[in-house]
Length: 317
Image (tube, rainbow, N blue to C red; front, side, top):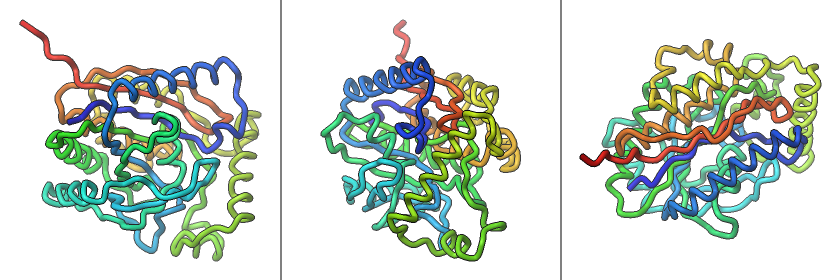
């Protein structure tokens, strides 16, 4: 059964770049309410739809969707490294269900996940509890990306599977909203960077530190108004939050990739994870959503949103 859904923005700069105190207080207050919702729902299993930031998936083989049957956190941007608690049998069963449902999802026995998956898990799940989790990668960082129609179909298939389970399942969508992170492009990359984008490879300490330092510096530039990255788009973000709250998860079906990039930045494509999560939730019937938080936070290079959803109670005659 589906207990509920949480859609949340992530940012590698949370904890690294300070923001105005009132905004920080509101954000972590919303996170606290979401944490309490998790406690109240008491899930046996978490299914998280997440993107990647060229840390675990590369152009050597870039699937639109992938189910993690076994996996490890790479430990970037302050998240804890180590093996994820993935129930192998359940993950394989889910992968089989997706294929039978017409969703061509890959699977991985060595999924490498970064802060895009791990940060929400660390923020939302009770400290010290090792909840079982199944990570589902949704390609948002690099073209060709899956269409929003296929993302919605993925979510509905996951939801159908979850409804068949006796265990209580929490759905999380991690990503978005508008943001334009300083990620390299395959077309304009140097030879060395191009090789990493294609073949991957583990970063040593100095490489990872330099990468993280560049992102932190960009957050400070964004806050100072000197960044050349696309500005955050609060109007677009609020439009999406209103649509998702109303159950209109098809709001981006007509949008092209260039539309998303121009309006929400290169990171705006991560909103696919919200569509998948809410599509899964809607498999249980119309949902009741609450916008817990929104603010455009340039210091974190992100339009930060948090939305919770549970099945709408059936009216009693």
